Amino acid sequence: MSSVLFDVPGPKARTRNVYLNAVTLIVVVGIIAFILFRFYQSGQFTAQKWEVFTFPLVQETFLKAIGATLSAFAVGAVGSLVLGIVLAFGRLADSKWLSLPCYWFTEVFRAVPLLILMMIMYYGLPSAGVKGITPFIAVVVGLILYNGSVLAEVFRAGIESLPKGQREAGLAIGLTNGQALRSILLPQAIRAMLPVIISQLVVIMKDTALGFLITYNEILYYSAVLGSQGDFGFPVVPALMVAAVIYVGLCLILSGVAKFTEYKMSSRVKVVKAKVGIAG
Amino acid sequence: MNVLINNSELFITGFKNTGILFVFSAFFALILGTIVAGMRVSPAPAMRGAGTFYVNAVRNTPLTLILAFFALGYPQLGLPQISFMNAAIVGLSLYTATYVSEAIRSGINTVSVGQSEAARAIGLPFMQTLTLIVLPQAFRSVVPPLFSVFIALLKNTTVAAGFSVLEAGAIRAYLSERGEPLLPGLLWVALIFVVLVLAILTPLQRYLEKKWRVAR
Image (cartoon, each protein chain N blue to C red):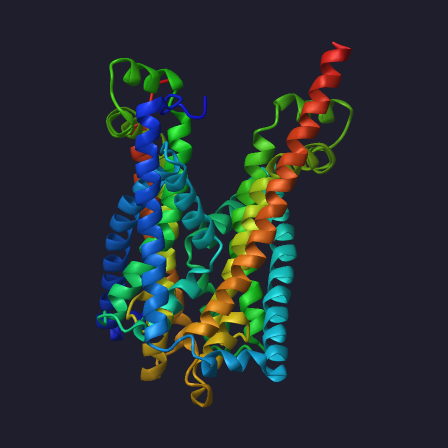
């Protein structure tokens, strides 16, 4: 059975599905064709507007912009993971003096819009006399504070979903609470939550595009700059299309990694189960 | 405090527009997301394909890029011009609808098979099985994820500030034009968002979650 919602189609349903397919195809192709036609009509596909991408200098700068996006992503991702683990530990600590501040930290930084965080870093702090805040620092710190708080909740949920006996066994063999957390609970939690963690990495990747709004020279920023070049007939639409393809490509690679690990892990769990079965 | 009082009309307009963006985008995203979720579980493969393509393409595109397209690219289309506000609503709705659709689809999967089997047994076709039996139950079980989607939407409205919409995210630009201190101004914006999310939306989410909990 393919779905809970409908039976295996009979002859009548099959003909109806053919019609439904045809209608959907016509609508979808119609919308895409209309957009492309309009772009064509307004001259978005003229050689003049696309020629700009053949210039080595433009290509080079685009590569630099991709590098800027990727470096913000890499630093943001690593920082968020570290902050997430630290905050999750803090929240699970025995001492109220440690767990309460960590609780409020995660709650507050998840509630503030990321763009506002970046603005506080980039516009707010320099206006209050803090020096040396580059757009890169603002983007990365914003990403780390926000996504670190989100990941802290992910780690905590992963740790709390584990059977209670895991921690108790750790304490029973004489580990401290922190040691049990580090060497017994966290590795299992990370493994269980890996798909969620990687999809959060996709979010980090997408959120680097917010850097555009605080003048960080990443892909989208450079596309907008390119689109405002009068010499090439303002190739806004081509530049945005190229940016979209790059972003979707990068995110799909990450999503693919998430799917792959999920698949890998589900198969590994199966192996473990089989072994337990044999032993039992 | 002075920044807030001296510029109260700016803060009020800003957050009023944030509210408008939020309410309309949430409304359209909910409708579109439900339709897309319906398409993704429908018996026609082309509908499933179209729904999946839409969700995968839009979910992997940054919201900033989508809004940039509507603000910078759309005017080049030669279609009737729309205001930046409406463009932002369209962009936010299209973006949020993919998350709504994913939430509802996972909700559909939680409805037990027996429900739709029973619906089919009494002769209901697909559309009625979906809209009368499965979706009402699915909606109840997706209240928490759906609320998370809407909280994210509220925060995402700030991105529209980059594209000439005067909402909460744009308050910064107006403050610096007036030569007001930026840090306190921005901290006020952040604080209002914290209050909106933690004092209003999150408790509402808990309340609805409790009220509509499905006994299974």
